[in-house]
Image 1 (cartoon, rainbow, N blue to C red):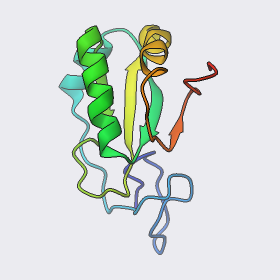
Image 2 (image 1 turned 45 degrees about the horizontal axis):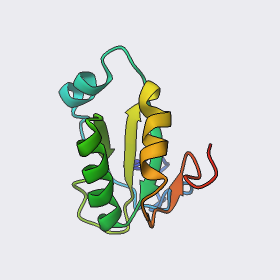
Image 3 (image 1 turned 90 degrees about the vertical axis):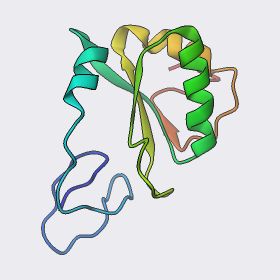
Image 4 (image 1 turned 180 degrees about the vertical axis):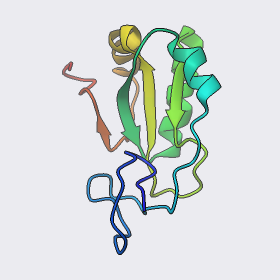
Length: 119
């Protein structure tokens, strides 16, 4: 069993990830390698935030698309509203994304920064 979010492997008998709180799956989905490589190039992706709110996803997409920032929304296509969507950006774009998102209202569950106070 695997956590689809953090990719941790669990022994049989476990049904939820202790860290992420999401249901475990029998196998991990294949990563969209081409998309990740296109976005990252030689950069590393860093997590900006996680949200379970689909309106957050739309707000984030609008802001980052308008700014021309490439990003990856991991879990965006998941059908369960219990599963979080994770926003990943290039490491060098992190601070700019933080600035762009600090003035919009988000209902996210956790983030790599507090957009109102900085990192």
